Amino acid sequence: MLDATDVTVTLGRRRVLDGVNFQAAPGELTAIVGPNGSGKTTLLRAVTGDLGYRGRITLAGEELSGIPAWRLAPRRAVLAQFTPLAFPFTVAEVVRLGQIRKGPGSAADLTPRALARVGLCGYASRPYQELSGGEQQRVQLARVLCQVWEPVEGSEARWLFLDEPVSSLDIAHQLQVMQIARDFADVGGGVVAIMHDLNLTAMFADSVALLAEGRLLEQASPEVLLRDDLLSRAYGCSLRVSTPPPSGPYVLPHAARLG
Image (cartoon, rainbow, N blue to C red; front, top):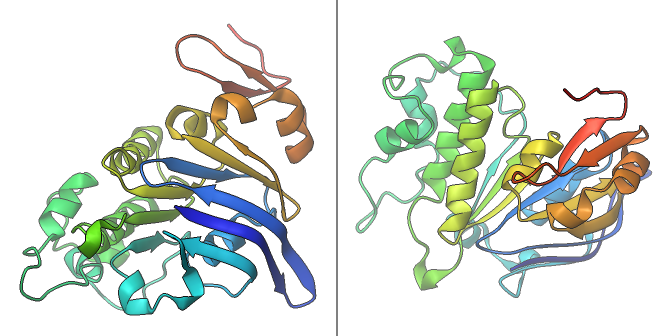
């Protein structure tokens, strides 16, 4: 279990997160949603140990700040929103950066399997810088999958933290990436993903945390959290949630017309 209690983050003189309580469980996909500037990426960086905070964050009951980097690395991988690379790496070289265990007992080169998983077979020798933004995003996903591909000693859960993982993708690849995240959770991994598409969130997430102005408004299942009044208040516009069977909640701007 990942448990954040009363987490506050101040950057400069601005309080970006204010007393946030947040939970995520292995075997589940937890989405963080909210308007721009609500603190989503700040919360993700705090719970991955990449940003200082006040409050308490524990991973499997252990204080996050006390876990050394060498123990944390095989347990959690982070897909950042932007991952600039200035060097002329090939796709395979980028993906191999994620394979941190290379000694006895570790798997062979995971690059072919990871690239196949994200639909990029045949891309290994291509220059990373020549790929489209969406292709680069999928290469980075292959890299983080390599980092947590192998089981952790002691049967500890592995975690994926994804910051807007579908932001540069067409609809087919959005579904592909979300299914990869869903599959990772279904075999016992924990997934925390920042999402803007509330309908993809409804389709794939087990739990949704809604932030606004640095505060957690609510965390619940999509069926409970995706409500007209709550979403409209958080996003500052009129939204309507319908529930056409059998898909579950579906969010539309109020001005949209159906049929």
